[in-house]
Length: 357
Image (cartoon, rainbow, N blue to C red):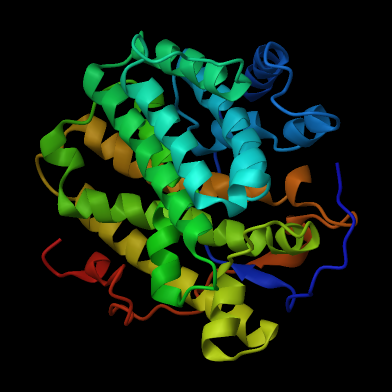
């Protein structure tokens, strides 16, 4: 599926710096077939054209790339959720009546969270295919993971929907620091990283999962994936006139009075500076004596999220505009645009560079 547009052009090609090897789960195609069967039970959530649009997210590929070592049964649940997540994003977050009505969105989001927290006390559906599908995935996860893991997954939804609510509530283009504060949550990154732990199998003990260094790496992973999506989806977002077009490039262009070219270059620099910090801190943390195997596997999995998200995005029909894929507009590079080792003057993320992590 392609979209037709006259999107504002960015300077091309945009460099991609990500020295992490690509991986993909060997059962990716089988996972996709089963997800399509599962989706058919919910009428693909949307009206005319919805099937083509939703299958064009290549969600099974996304799940297989960001969790290449997952248990196959759990990867199936992750794939199903990714299709649901993209459908929900299109219907409620970036477009649709709730995308410009914060109060209405918050009521709906609160209902979703309560259903996940108390599935027996809250109806899973009022003829709502999104709610019914999410209840199904939640029950399947709850049946095979630890209560702690499932609780982390539920809380990740709270963070995601809170971030979307913040996005919808921000009428004007936010400044860069405010934008990053929103972006750390509104791209469902915490759901992806929480699902990664569930899909891998073993629970990461709280005393390791809650370490400041692990939290910092997790946040960096989520923001890096979100900022990469900002760059890869820019043409799609602007061409389809989505209700909420907040994007790193437009934020920088607005805040700093730059044209698209300088703003895009600055966006790549910010992204690469975070990438460099992620790589350094991940290496330091994995060299720490005494860290358990599940925690080490989790930290390594964050790198797969970053790289897998990029590889998925480059050819996904969702980001294809006028026959041009995201991959046609980028070039791989071995060198970061900004490798400064010090924290940027952005309070929302500066703690990632703390020396005592």
